[in-house]
Amino acid sequence: MTDLLNVVRQYKQDSESVYNTWFINNEDRLKAFRSIRRGVLNVIQDIKTGSFGNDFKGSSLEFVLSCITEQKQVFEGAAHPFYWKPKLRIPDIYETEANKVAFGQFLESCVNATKEEQLVKEIIKLSSRNIKGLGPSVANILYFLHPTILPPFNTAIVNGFNLLFNEKQKLGSWESYLKMREVILQFNAQNRNELSNDLGAIAGLLFEIGANKLLIEGASALDETQKTKIEKLLKKRHAEVLSEQQEENLHTEMQYHLIKIGHALGYDAVVASNDRSKAYCDTKFSFLCIPCLPKMETDRDTFNTISLIDVLWLEKGTNRVISAFEVEKSTSIYSGILRLSDLAVSFPHDLRTLFLVAPNQREKEVVLQLKRPSIKQQNVSIQYILFSELRQHCDAICKFGADHSAMAKIAKIA
Image (cartoon, rainbow, N blue to C red; front, side):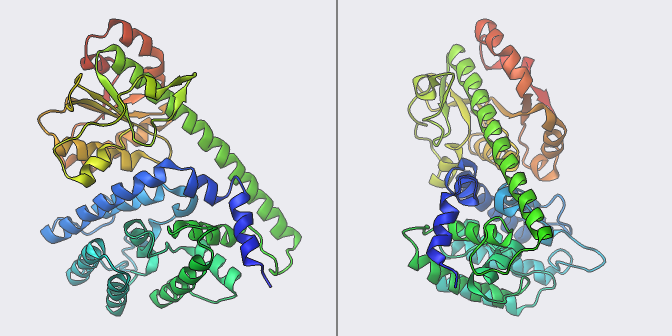
């Protein structure tokens, strides 16, 4: 019999587990919730106005799933079920108008729902329509709308659930999803002191078990081939954790250069609300930045989104944004673009310049994303700066730059 409490504790104590690398120590996970919610609202609006299109590629739905797959520790393949497969005519939300509208209405109802029973009712209603190819992979979107009510759902999570609870639930069934959810909620309630109200914690546990990264007592004995496979998985995970730490260090360095330049040019600099305790080369951001983002004339959700932008330059002593910078890592490009777009739409007459700051090796990807139709349609101009250029020219801009226009010397247009 599996000792479930020990499994949970083993999961939490592993410094490289999903719990520690994605759920607890990952600022991008928290940023994703607002970006994804805003993206879902765009999907709903596109379906209402008839501009959603008949393919996943280039759609507002692709943008949402891209934001989700950035959370690669758990959601790397979350977009695959939504790819339009012409030969199979699935998922049938692109060409059949009634199904497209039903999907949009489902998303709108879920965005606006405040109670568990409302969400379950909407899931059952959608399931009863039997839309071809549209299964519980949608739960990955729903999780980011209601993380304390609806758990995410993928192959590894289902496999982990079946192993941990000795069940036989199926991947493509809404009925199986709802059954799993009941068991997950009960188990989470019993172990809330060890886990969290946010169901991402227990979903990460199931993912680790299903991906064979966390072995449980009572499971079948492993043969040599299985042992070798698990060793490779663990080595891969270790390499990913080291890579993410290096990325985080680079991210902090680039934020520091931007803060330093803004300060030298005479602007008030402010960093993302969850980055204020950071430091680079023993210099704390709090010593170079104003304490927080000043109040702005916008709604709370938009203000919260703007407050997560990596670096903002403000006109001295005011709340007027002069320039905004999103520093990209391997997990943030889509949500970063969305935050900059939100800022531009909210203050179309005040903002001077928007920038993505990206690693050199991601230049082609940045250009591709900035040219996406869904970005172009918003009439938002975003330039990009490469890490090497910012690092190399930081001191020169600080010394010789007069104002924000100095950044044009190292910025590029997609």
